[in-house]
Image (cartoon, rainbow, N blue to C red; front, side, top):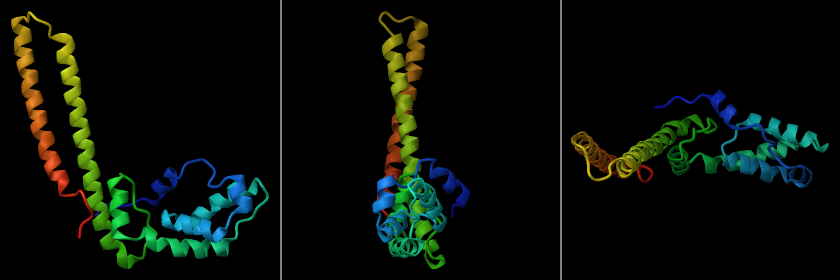
Length: 180
């Protein structure tokens, strides 16, 4: 199981305002809380709304926000959502009941594996493209004996990269959807 650091999540929240002035003045705080719950936001996230709305003289309705957040959290706390979060390379927020943690982290790990494999494939494809670019730019007929040897080595590397990409793609297919 991967370890989650709440402080890292707070750093990801960003420095921008959580709501626009219009959302503060016209906002349905239950709906705002519901949307925050669906996004897995921590209870402390309301402090960002206080900061954003203070500028326009609005005080968030904490009770309505908490009620909405509680209604939205069950949509966040699903194995399919945990998988999607992992697959996108994001961390799972620690807002779900302890009784669901094993199932959610299993799904999240599954999605993370897909994400990691995708990143590895992308890196190998980048390397392939760089070698192919190098070959196109550097190897113009007639080739010297040294260039023939280097070209042979680069072509072997390209074949090896191709095999590794296919192997990783085969492995990634296993993680292409949430575990059952």
